[in-house]
Each structure stands twice: as C-alpha cells, then as structure tokens.
Image (cartoon, rainbow, N blue to C red):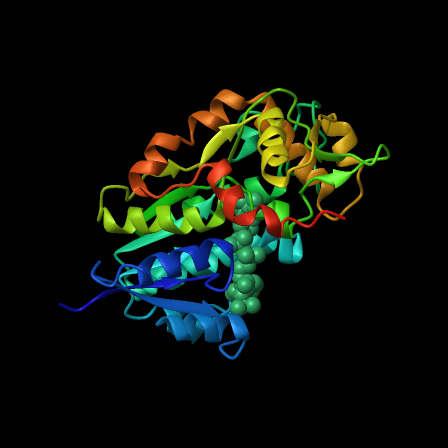
Length: 315
Ligand SMILES: NC(=O)c1ccc[n+]([C@@H]2O[C@H](COP(=O)([O-])OP(=O)(O)OC[C@H]3O[C@@H](n4cnc5c(N)ncnc54)[C@H](OP(=O)(O)O)[C@@H]3O)[C@@H](O)[C@H]2O)c1
C-alpha cells in the first residue's frame, strides 16, 4: 500500500524533528515523511536523510517553496519560529503562507502548532501585565492564535495543537538552573505555587503522529498536550535528585522576570504570568491523560531527566 506522506515544517528542529523520528520509527504505520529544511545540505538535514526521510527544501517565508514542498502530501505539520525574528506580524504571515500552501496542495490533514489568544482572558485594557508592541499581551501566543482562522477560512482540514513548555529549554534556551550569589543552583520562574504544563519536545512530535494516525478524529478540533503539570518546587526537587546537587526554586514576580533584559524577556514574563493567573484554563486545555492516549510512550519529567540531566549546562 502506498504510504501517506506527512510533510513536516521545522523538521531539523524540536517539534518537527520529533514528528519525523516518530514516523520513521514506525515503518509499518502506513506513513512516510518529507522533512522540510532551508538547507538540505546541513548536518541535521543529512542526519534525517540517513534515517530514511525524504528531505526537501522549503522556507516559511517563501510560499512557492512551501507549495512545492507540500505537493502530493497527505498531511502537513505547520510550525512557525517566533524566536528567530521576534515579529508577531511575520509569524502570522508565515502561518498564512503555510495555510495557503496546504490548501493548494489539497492536503487531507494539517496540524497547526498554535497557542491561545491570551487577550481573551487578559484584554489589552487590563493593566495586570504590560501591552507589548501596541497590541499583544503574550505576542508569541496571540500571533499564532490570530492565524488560526486562516486555516479554517480556507477550509483546510486542520487540528489546532496547543503545545507546552519544553523541558529542552533547560538545555538550549538558557532556562535551566543557574548559580545564585550564594553559589547554589536555582530555577527561576515567576509561577508562584502554580502548575506549569511542560513536556519533552520529542513527545510533541509523537503526539502529533498520534493525531495523524487517528485519521479525521481531531480535524476541526483544538487539542492540548503536556507530559506533566508541575510546580516550580516539584521541578526543582526533580532537578535536585537528577543532578545530585540542590536546586532551589527561585519564585520571582513577573515584573522582575520581565526586567531581566534578555531578548523576549517581557514576552516570557507575560507568558508565565498568564499561565500562573489562568492556571485552570491553561492546564485544563492540556490533559496529560489525553496526551498519553495519543502517545503511550509519553515521558514524565523524572524519566526525561534520567536521559537528559547530564546535558543541562550548569555554569
Ligand atoms: N521553547 C518552548 O518551550 C516552546 C514550547 C511550545 C511552543 N514553542 C514554539 O515553537 C516554535 C518553534 O518550534 P521549534 O522549537 O520546533 O523550532 P526550533 O527547534 O527552534 O527550530 C526548528 C527548525 O526550524 C527551521 N526554520 C527556522 N526558520 C525557518 C524558516 N524561515 N523556514 C523554514 N524552516 C525554518 C530550522 O531548520 P533549517 O535551518 O533546517 O531550515 C530549525 O532547525 C516557536 O514559534 C515557539 O513559540 C516553543
């Protein structure tokens, strides 16, 4: 039987890479994978080809390349790269381009990796957090959500996937424990005692594969995923155990977090505040049980740490 091709944007990255590997690990599953990258000759692209993926060129800023890359695909995985440019408008344009390319290719199933529009709960007039760039509260959430309707308006059969904070941020995104003035490691997050849904990015790909495998069941639906819902205290305690040295939870206020000054600090500060202040909404949209149904191999934070703790850079 001919395999159903899933064309994956961001294939050399976290979410897309997880999906590519999930499909390749299941050769009897009936799916084939087309990995989309801007550079088919990069080491990461070559590694995917060596695993058995078809690797093709594509750039979310170039709609004609997306049309070529999506042609003949049964499904597409669409993701944008906010942290590569910090522009909500660019992110909306990229999602719009993917939706149009998916429509033209006549795909049977698109997964769009999106987020909530936080302004539904915290309108621009609400001064509990600053408005960013004149019209956003959490720019990288609100922009993704603003693009949802494009998929719907064009009639692209789409599943809207709400992802969660990656544990890999502790390795690559500078979000891991850092030594404080007392020389002790601390995990700094403005979450108070509230739970943060989080996940291994590899499991996002596996859950996405579960969505494709379920045929039309989740088309037209918004589904959320998480590996666990953990407080900062619980994360710090798991890190303490895995790293063999004490990690404290440094609960700062969102105001302090926003003032840290790294690129995107205000956006991240608002994001954590949204997750903290609307915990029921945010956790409620990301059931761990449902995620495990999509992906029975879903990891807990403790399990993820067993294989990844040694990769967390500790200055
Ligand atoms: N960090 C988190 O905790 C988290 C959690 C949930 C959601 N997110 C969202 O995840 C999104 C990023 O996804 P990710 O983490 O999977 O990405 P990633 O790992 O940072 O990068 C994925 C790949 O995207 C490709 N890429 C970058 N710009 C591109 C472009 N213009 N056209 C085509 N491909 C491009 C790059 O591949 P090539 O160089 O090979 O082209 C890169 O390897 C962000 O929008 C973020 O908001 C992040």
